[in-house]
Image (tube, rainbow, N blue to C red; front, top):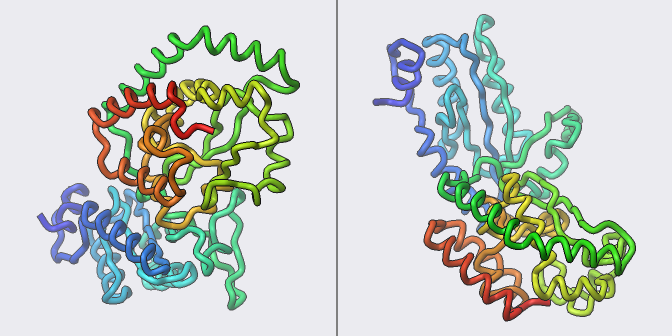
Length: 361
Protein backbone atom coordinates (compact mmCIF):
# COMPACT_ATOMS: atom_id res chain seq x y z
CA UNK A 1 0.00 0.00 0.00
CA UNK A 2 1.30 3.47 -0.86
CA UNK A 3 2.49 5.40 2.19
CA UNK A 4 -0.03 8.21 1.90
CA UNK A 5 -2.80 5.63 1.61
CA UNK A 6 -1.47 4.10 4.81
CA UNK A 7 -1.55 7.48 6.53
CA UNK A 8 -5.10 8.16 5.47
CA UNK A 9 -6.20 4.62 6.30
CA UNK A 10 -5.04 5.27 9.87
CA UNK A 11 -7.20 8.42 9.76
CA UNK A 12 -10.20 6.46 8.48
CA UNK A 13 -10.19 7.78 4.90
CA UNK A 14 -8.66 7.07 1.51
CA UNK A 15 -6.74 9.80 -0.37
CA UNK A 16 -7.87 11.06 -3.74
CA UNK A 17 -4.23 11.45 -4.91
CA UNK A 18 -0.95 9.90 -3.95
CA UNK A 19 2.24 11.69 -2.86
CA UNK A 20 5.63 9.87 -3.15
CA UNK A 21 6.69 9.81 0.51
CA UNK A 22 9.22 7.36 1.95
CA UNK A 23 8.24 4.76 4.55
CA UNK A 24 9.69 4.92 8.12
CA UNK A 25 12.01 2.00 7.32
CA UNK A 26 13.30 3.74 4.20
CA UNK A 27 13.81 7.02 6.08
CA UNK A 28 15.89 5.22 8.75
CA UNK A 29 18.06 3.69 6.03
CA UNK A 30 18.55 7.09 4.37
CA UNK A 31 19.49 8.69 7.71
CA UNK A 32 22.14 6.02 8.23
CA UNK A 33 23.42 6.46 4.68
CA UNK A 34 23.70 10.24 5.08
CA UNK A 35 25.49 9.83 8.40
CA UNK A 36 28.12 7.64 6.75
CA UNK A 37 28.55 10.18 3.94
CA UNK A 38 28.85 13.05 6.40
CA UNK A 39 31.40 11.20 8.54
CA UNK A 40 33.54 10.19 5.56
CA UNK A 41 33.33 13.51 3.76
CA UNK A 42 33.59 15.71 6.86
CA UNK A 43 30.30 17.39 5.94
CA UNK A 44 27.00 17.84 7.74
CA UNK A 45 23.31 17.31 7.11
CA UNK A 46 20.04 18.26 8.78
CA UNK A 47 16.72 16.61 9.54
CA UNK A 48 13.55 18.70 9.70
CA UNK A 49 10.62 17.03 11.49
CA UNK A 50 6.98 18.11 11.34
CA UNK A 51 4.64 16.69 14.00
CA UNK A 52 1.00 16.87 12.85
CA UNK A 53 -1.92 17.08 15.24
CA UNK A 54 -4.83 14.66 15.25
CA UNK A 55 -7.04 17.42 13.85
CA UNK A 56 -5.33 17.34 10.44
CA UNK A 57 -7.70 16.08 7.74
CA UNK A 58 -7.06 13.88 4.70
CA UNK A 59 -6.98 16.87 2.38
CA UNK A 60 -4.53 18.69 4.66
CA UNK A 61 -2.22 15.68 4.69
CA UNK A 62 -2.19 15.86 0.90
CA UNK A 63 -1.60 19.61 0.91
CA UNK A 64 1.39 19.32 3.24
CA UNK A 65 2.84 16.42 1.28
CA UNK A 66 2.55 18.34 -1.97
CA UNK A 67 4.14 21.43 -0.41
CA UNK A 68 7.10 19.45 0.89
CA UNK A 69 7.69 17.64 -2.39
CA UNK A 70 7.51 20.96 -4.25
CA UNK A 71 9.80 22.79 -1.81
CA UNK A 72 12.68 20.33 -1.39
CA UNK A 73 15.65 19.78 -3.69
CA UNK A 74 16.23 16.66 -5.79
CA UNK A 75 18.86 15.55 -3.28
CA UNK A 76 16.46 15.80 -0.31
CA UNK A 77 14.17 13.04 0.96
CA UNK A 78 10.70 13.31 2.47
CA UNK A 79 8.89 10.59 4.38
CA UNK A 80 7.19 9.36 7.51
CA UNK A 81 9.32 8.86 10.64
CA UNK A 82 6.58 7.86 13.08
CA UNK A 83 2.81 8.14 13.26
CA UNK A 84 1.92 11.70 12.23
CA UNK A 85 5.60 12.70 12.20
CA UNK A 86 6.97 13.70 8.81
CA UNK A 87 10.69 14.17 8.15
CA UNK A 88 12.75 16.00 5.55
CA UNK A 89 16.39 14.87 5.20
CA UNK A 90 18.54 17.77 3.94
CA UNK A 91 22.11 16.83 2.93
CA UNK A 92 24.82 19.48 3.36
CA UNK A 93 22.36 21.92 4.88
CA UNK A 94 23.14 24.20 7.86
CA UNK A 95 20.68 24.82 10.66
CA UNK A 96 19.39 28.10 9.25
CA UNK A 97 18.77 26.38 5.90
CA UNK A 98 16.62 23.70 7.53
CA UNK A 99 14.60 26.30 9.42
CA UNK A 100 14.11 28.25 6.19
CA UNK A 101 12.50 25.17 4.63
CA UNK A 102 10.19 24.95 7.66
CA UNK A 103 9.25 28.64 7.43
CA UNK A 104 8.63 28.43 3.68
CA UNK A 105 6.32 25.44 4.05
CA UNK A 106 4.42 26.88 7.02
CA UNK A 107 3.93 30.18 5.18
CA UNK A 108 2.14 28.40 2.33
CA UNK A 109 -0.26 26.41 4.49
CA UNK A 110 -3.93 27.53 4.47
CA UNK A 111 -5.07 29.66 7.40
CA UNK A 112 -7.35 26.85 8.64
CA UNK A 113 -4.45 24.35 8.74
CA UNK A 114 -3.43 23.41 12.29
CA UNK A 115 0.33 24.15 11.92
CA UNK A 116 2.70 21.25 12.65
CA UNK A 117 5.33 21.46 15.40
CA UNK A 118 8.75 21.69 13.76
CA UNK A 119 12.17 20.64 15.04
CA UNK A 120 15.59 20.57 13.41
CA UNK A 121 18.31 18.00 14.11
CA UNK A 122 21.90 18.17 12.83
CA UNK A 123 24.76 15.74 12.30
CA UNK A 124 27.47 15.93 13.34
CA UNK A 125 26.23 17.75 16.42
CA UNK A 126 29.57 19.53 16.86
CA UNK A 127 29.99 20.62 13.24
CA UNK A 128 31.75 23.98 13.21
CA UNK A 129 28.93 25.66 11.27
CA UNK A 130 26.19 24.37 13.58
CA UNK A 131 27.64 24.32 17.10
CA UNK A 132 26.24 27.76 17.97
CA UNK A 133 22.72 26.58 17.14
CA UNK A 134 22.66 23.44 19.27
CA UNK A 135 19.79 23.28 21.73
CA UNK A 136 21.01 24.45 25.11
CA UNK A 137 19.83 23.48 28.54
CA UNK A 138 17.56 26.53 28.54
CA UNK A 139 16.48 26.18 24.88
CA UNK A 140 17.26 29.78 24.00
CA UNK A 141 17.29 31.16 20.48
CA UNK A 142 20.63 31.97 18.89
CA UNK A 143 21.57 34.74 16.48
CA UNK A 144 22.18 33.74 12.88
CA UNK A 145 25.06 35.35 10.94
CA UNK A 146 22.53 37.56 9.13
CA UNK A 147 21.25 38.85 12.47
CA UNK A 148 17.91 37.01 12.40
CA UNK A 149 17.02 34.70 15.30
CA UNK A 150 17.47 31.00 14.52
CA UNK A 151 15.63 28.52 16.76
CA UNK A 152 17.82 25.97 18.51
CA UNK A 153 18.72 22.69 16.82
CA UNK A 154 19.16 19.28 18.40
CA UNK A 155 21.70 16.52 18.02
CA UNK A 156 20.60 13.82 15.59
CA UNK A 157 22.12 11.06 17.75
CA UNK A 158 18.72 10.18 19.18
CA UNK A 159 17.58 9.08 15.70
CA UNK A 160 20.41 6.54 15.40
CA UNK A 161 19.63 4.70 18.65
CA UNK A 162 19.31 0.92 18.47
CA UNK A 163 16.75 -0.07 21.13
CA UNK A 164 17.82 -2.59 23.75
CA UNK A 165 16.27 -6.00 22.90
CA UNK A 166 13.98 -7.57 25.48
CA UNK A 167 16.29 -10.57 25.96
CA UNK A 168 19.17 -8.23 26.72
CA UNK A 169 17.28 -6.30 29.37
CA UNK A 170 16.19 -9.59 31.00
CA UNK A 171 19.81 -10.79 31.12
CA UNK A 172 20.88 -7.42 32.55
CA UNK A 173 18.39 -7.53 35.41
CA UNK A 174 19.12 -11.15 36.29
CA UNK A 175 22.88 -10.72 35.97
CA UNK A 176 23.00 -7.50 38.01
CA UNK A 177 20.94 -9.04 40.84
CA UNK A 178 23.15 -12.13 40.94
CA UNK A 179 26.27 -9.95 40.74
CA UNK A 180 25.20 -7.77 43.66
CA UNK A 181 24.34 -10.80 45.79
CA UNK A 182 27.58 -12.67 45.06
CA UNK A 183 29.81 -9.63 45.52
CA UNK A 184 28.02 -8.15 48.54
CA UNK A 185 30.81 -9.21 50.98
CA UNK A 186 33.39 -7.57 48.69
CA UNK A 187 31.28 -4.44 48.43
CA UNK A 188 31.02 -4.16 52.21
CA UNK A 189 34.72 -4.77 52.89
CA UNK A 190 35.75 -2.34 50.15
CA UNK A 191 33.48 0.41 51.49
CA UNK A 192 34.96 0.03 54.98
CA UNK A 193 38.53 -0.02 53.61
CA UNK A 194 38.04 3.17 51.57
CA UNK A 195 36.57 5.01 54.52
CA UNK A 196 39.39 3.85 56.80
CA UNK A 197 42.31 4.69 54.48
CA UNK A 198 41.48 8.07 52.92
CA UNK A 199 39.35 11.17 53.34
CA UNK A 200 36.29 11.58 51.23
CA UNK A 201 33.16 9.65 50.21
CA UNK A 202 33.12 5.91 49.57
CA UNK A 203 31.50 6.25 46.17
CA UNK A 204 32.47 8.37 43.18
CA UNK A 205 29.73 9.56 40.82
CA UNK A 206 30.36 11.21 37.49
CA UNK A 207 28.21 12.17 34.47
CA UNK A 208 28.81 9.89 31.49
CA UNK A 209 27.40 9.89 27.95
CA UNK A 210 24.98 7.07 27.25
CA UNK A 211 22.78 5.85 24.40
CA UNK A 212 21.64 8.62 22.06
CA UNK A 213 23.98 11.16 23.64
CA UNK A 214 21.96 11.32 26.86
CA UNK A 215 23.73 11.47 30.22
CA UNK A 216 23.60 9.54 33.47
CA UNK A 217 25.61 9.39 36.69
CA UNK A 218 27.90 6.37 36.88
CA UNK A 219 28.68 4.77 40.25
CA UNK A 220 32.18 3.62 41.20
CA UNK A 221 34.17 3.06 44.36
CA UNK A 222 36.35 6.11 44.88
CA UNK A 223 39.95 5.30 43.92
CA UNK A 224 41.36 8.83 43.81
CA UNK A 225 41.84 11.82 46.06
CA UNK A 226 38.79 14.02 46.49
CA UNK A 227 40.02 16.82 44.15
CA UNK A 228 41.02 14.44 41.35
CA UNK A 229 38.75 16.04 38.75
CA UNK A 230 40.26 19.47 39.36
CA UNK A 231 43.75 18.04 38.73
CA UNK A 232 42.86 16.25 35.50
CA UNK A 233 43.42 19.19 33.15
CA UNK A 234 46.98 19.71 34.42
CA UNK A 235 47.78 16.02 33.95
CA UNK A 236 46.24 15.72 30.47
CA UNK A 237 49.63 16.14 28.74
CA UNK A 238 50.90 13.00 30.51
CA UNK A 239 48.10 10.76 29.19
CA UNK A 240 49.44 7.51 27.73
CA UNK A 241 46.29 6.79 25.70
CA UNK A 242 45.96 8.46 22.32
CA UNK A 243 42.73 10.19 21.43
CA UNK A 244 40.45 11.99 23.88
CA UNK A 245 40.51 9.22 26.52
CA UNK A 246 42.74 9.82 29.56
CA UNK A 247 44.91 6.90 30.76
CA UNK A 248 48.01 7.27 32.94
CA UNK A 249 49.98 4.40 34.52
CA UNK A 250 51.40 6.33 37.46
CA UNK A 251 48.49 8.69 38.02
CA UNK A 252 49.38 10.65 41.21
CA UNK A 253 45.71 11.11 42.04
CA UNK A 254 45.13 7.40 42.71
CA UNK A 255 45.29 6.24 46.32
CA UNK A 256 47.21 3.11 47.36
CA UNK A 257 44.00 1.18 47.88
CA UNK A 258 42.57 2.68 44.71
CA UNK A 259 45.39 1.22 42.63
CA UNK A 260 44.49 -2.27 43.86
CA UNK A 261 40.79 -1.68 43.25
CA UNK A 262 41.49 -0.61 39.68
CA UNK A 263 43.83 -3.51 38.95
CA UNK A 264 41.16 -5.96 40.08
CA UNK A 265 38.22 -3.96 38.64
CA UNK A 266 36.54 -4.03 42.07
CA UNK A 267 35.97 -0.28 41.71
CA UNK A 268 33.48 -1.04 38.89
CA UNK A 269 31.20 -3.33 40.96
CA UNK A 270 28.77 -0.56 42.04
CA UNK A 271 27.82 -0.26 38.37
CA UNK A 272 25.56 -3.28 38.86
CA UNK A 273 23.23 -0.62 40.32
CA UNK A 274 23.46 1.35 37.05
CA UNK A 275 22.54 -1.83 35.19
CA UNK A 276 19.49 -2.43 37.39
CA UNK A 277 18.38 1.18 36.85
CA UNK A 278 18.66 0.78 33.09
CA UNK A 279 21.47 3.33 32.69
CA UNK A 280 23.82 0.60 31.49
CA UNK A 281 23.88 -2.98 30.26
CA UNK A 282 26.10 -5.85 31.36
CA UNK A 283 27.67 -5.83 27.89
CA UNK A 284 28.22 -2.71 25.82
CA UNK A 285 30.81 0.00 25.07
CA UNK A 286 32.41 1.39 28.22
CA UNK A 287 30.89 4.85 28.94
CA UNK A 288 33.40 7.69 28.62
CA UNK A 289 33.43 10.83 30.78
CA UNK A 290 31.48 13.57 29.02
CA UNK A 291 34.55 15.68 28.18
CA UNK A 292 36.27 12.68 26.58
CA UNK A 293 33.13 11.62 24.73
CA UNK A 294 32.65 15.11 23.29
CA UNK A 295 36.25 14.96 22.05
CA UNK A 296 35.47 11.95 19.86
CA UNK A 297 35.22 12.30 16.11
CA UNK A 298 31.76 11.97 14.56
CA UNK A 299 32.27 8.35 13.46
CA UNK A 300 33.55 7.43 16.92
CA UNK A 301 30.34 8.66 18.55
CA UNK A 302 28.48 5.84 16.81
CA UNK A 303 29.31 3.86 19.96
CA UNK A 304 26.40 5.82 21.50
CA UNK A 305 23.94 3.98 19.24
CA UNK A 306 23.68 1.29 21.92
CA UNK A 307 23.60 1.29 25.72
CA UNK A 308 26.99 1.35 27.49
CA UNK A 309 28.08 -1.67 29.49
CA UNK A 310 30.22 -3.10 32.25
CA UNK A 311 32.24 -5.10 29.76
CA UNK A 312 32.68 -5.39 26.01
CA UNK A 313 35.20 -6.58 23.42
CA UNK A 314 37.70 -3.89 24.44
CA UNK A 315 37.47 -4.88 28.10
CA UNK A 316 38.36 -8.47 27.22
CA UNK A 317 40.86 -8.10 24.37
CA UNK A 318 42.03 -4.50 24.34
CA UNK A 319 42.25 -2.14 27.31
CA UNK A 320 45.62 -0.34 27.45
CA UNK A 321 47.11 -2.51 24.70
CA UNK A 322 45.30 -0.93 21.75
CA UNK A 323 44.97 2.54 20.23
CA UNK A 324 41.87 4.63 20.85
CA UNK A 325 40.72 4.19 17.23
CA UNK A 326 40.97 0.40 17.55
CA UNK A 327 39.11 0.58 20.86
CA UNK A 328 36.24 2.38 19.12
CA UNK A 329 36.27 -0.10 16.22
CA UNK A 330 35.83 -2.91 18.77
CA UNK A 331 32.82 -1.07 20.22
CA UNK A 332 31.28 -0.54 16.78
CA UNK A 333 31.85 -4.18 15.85
CA UNK A 334 29.88 -5.20 18.92
CA UNK A 335 27.09 -2.65 18.25
CA UNK A 336 26.56 -3.99 14.71
CA UNK A 337 26.25 -7.64 15.75
CA UNK A 338 24.66 -7.94 19.18
CA UNK A 339 23.36 -11.36 20.16
CA UNK A 340 22.57 -13.35 23.29
CA UNK A 341 25.39 -15.81 22.60
CA UNK A 342 27.94 -13.03 22.10
CA UNK A 343 26.88 -11.32 25.33
CA UNK A 344 27.15 -14.53 27.34
CA UNK A 345 30.59 -15.29 25.86
CA UNK A 346 31.88 -11.80 26.66
CA UNK A 347 30.59 -12.04 30.22
CA UNK A 348 32.36 -15.38 30.68
CA UNK A 349 35.58 -14.07 29.06
CA UNK A 350 35.59 -11.00 31.31
CA UNK A 351 36.22 -13.10 34.43
CA UNK A 352 39.66 -14.46 33.40
CA UNK A 353 40.55 -11.07 31.83
CA UNK A 354 39.97 -9.41 35.21
CA UNK A 355 41.61 -12.15 37.27
CA UNK A 356 44.72 -12.18 35.05
CA UNK A 357 44.65 -8.34 34.89
CA UNK A 358 45.19 -8.34 31.14
CA UNK A 359 45.87 -4.76 30.04
CA UNK A 360 44.81 -3.34 33.42
CA UNK A 361 46.47 -0.20 34.79
